[in-house]
Image 1 (tube, rainbow, N blue to C red):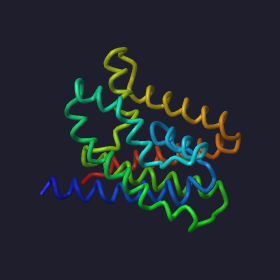
Image 2 (image 1 turned 180 degrees about the vertical axis):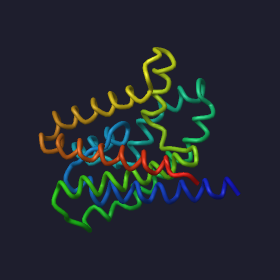
Image 3 (image 1 turned 60 degrees about the vertical axis):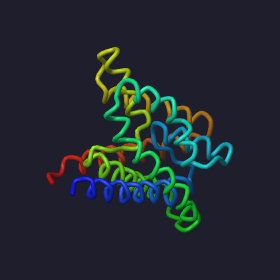
Image 4 (image 1 turned 135 degrees about the vertical axis):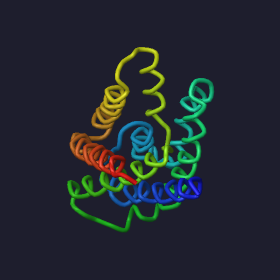
Length: 190
C-alpha cells in the first residue's frame, strides 16, 4: 500500500511541478533553484527541453548518489524521470495562462513547492542539487540547508546575470514561495 501511495505522490507531485514551471515560470523567464533552475536557464537561452536538461544535468549527481547514497539514488530516480517527462509533456501550458509577472512568480512558486512537498512526504524527490548538497555537507560538516540555499542563490544570481534583473527579482519571490509551500506541505501530519 505504501508503494502505491508513493507512486501516486510522484505522479501528482510531478504534475504540480510541471504546472508551476510551464504555466507560470516560463512565460516570464522566472527561475527555480538548483538543477531545475539551471535547466530553465538553458531553456531561456537555447530553447533546450527543460525535462531533458534536468535529466542530463542530474547524471553526475546520480553517479555520486549511486556510490555514496544508494538509498537517495533509488528514492529519487523515479521522481527525477517522471517529473522530467511530465514537464516536457505539459509544455503546451506555457501559452495558456497570462498573469502579471509577480503574481505568476507567486503562483508558480506555490505549484512547484506543492509538487516538491508532496514527493518529499513520501521520501522521494527530483534529486538534483539536494543530493549534491547532502554529499558536500557530509564532507564539510556545513548544514545541508545552508548549502541548498547557497546553491539556489548561485543559480538565481547566474540567471539574473545571463537573463535580466527582472528575472532575478521574480525568481527570488518564486523560490521564497517554493520554500514556504514545501515546508508547509512536509510539516503536515499524515
